[in-house]
Image 1: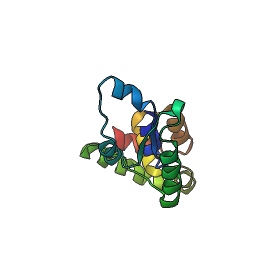
Image 2: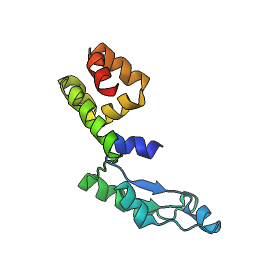
Image 3: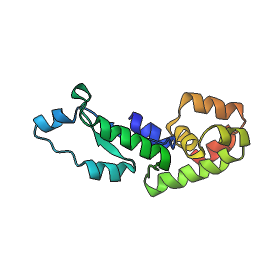
Length: 134
């Protein structure tokens, strides 16, 4: 869940898939490349207790910080359209759109996040958003 939230925040990130030995010992095989492609960010398998994968993780951190890897979570078309419509309203407040990624704000509004809804109400955007959200 945290990874999804960071992706929605358009954070520059990678995933350290720790305890990868446990899944292996249970007979599970994780498609690291496929997971990386699905998430749109580098995924590095690690076993922190024995320091396995730490050099690869360090290299990935350096590379990610240089390239600025930012992924975008894609939802169904109707949700994407709603995100765009809400985003158009959020962009009108320059301070808000500078402080938070517009897409993230739109997703939080759809979720009904209490803090974001309070902020939107304080900015006087609630009525217009209600028309879009329904």
